[in-house]
Amino acid sequence: MYSEQLIAPTPASTGKTIAACVAGFVLPGLGHVVLGKYIRGALIGAVIIIMFVLGFVMEGHLYKPESQDWLTWFFSFLDVGIGLPYFVCLANDWGFQVTEAQAAKVTYEYGNTFFCVAGALNMLSVMDAYDIGVGRKA
Image (tube, rainbow, N blue to C red; front, side):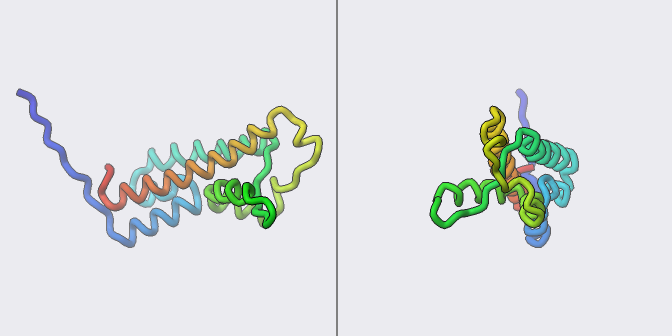
């Protein structure tokens, strides 16, 4: 008869969990590194940053909320999910301008999608770091 003993993960302190969530939002993967999950943090960070860079390579654009267009608020929320890289781009006005030639490119919408998905994945990685921090996940 085979029996398997399940060992519950040990939760981190509340302060460390909060620090991991904030760090994970600021820079993708950093929350996992704070919790000691170095390989997971490196993989998550690398994948999300690569997706963000590919958004630029495909000449997509980042969204800013516009008062008359409610859909820009949704896409802006997703883009902000990437954390610090979004705000660096916002401060330098990188990726927010759209030209006719850029919008006519085949890869333009793919680039927009890569930006949004990178932000959404980073928000999910912050939730994953939270689950690890409170001991719900190893």
